[in-house]
Length: 137
Image 1 (cartoon, rainbow, N blue to C red):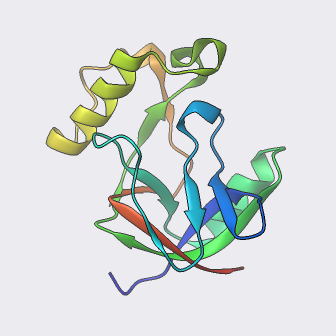
Image 2 (cartoon, rainbow, N blue to C red):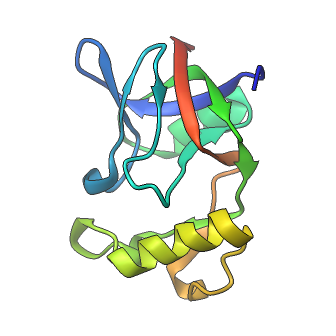
């Protein structure tokens, strides 16, 4: 847990940061130097393994994304994530969202999710039980 990871966040209010989520329904609020856990007990939080991974994600997105060094509890690599086609009109279909995280966390497998709803995770993407933002990069 002493390793440094990188979190992409959207700014911000004075002391709050939000996950760089494309689905505002699942945006997570972060505070500097405080542990943050997912709102849904079945889900995880995303971080990047390297600064380069986070910078590449930032460069590929038009959102105003900021990168923070962070700590992560129980980080694990993930190769696929839910794509936009699982997110009609700005919200994930609840059953698919729950199935994705259930399979990812329990069996570390996403075989029960239709392939058409999945996309490759950005390089270096990890999932974690909790994240603590440390400082901006």
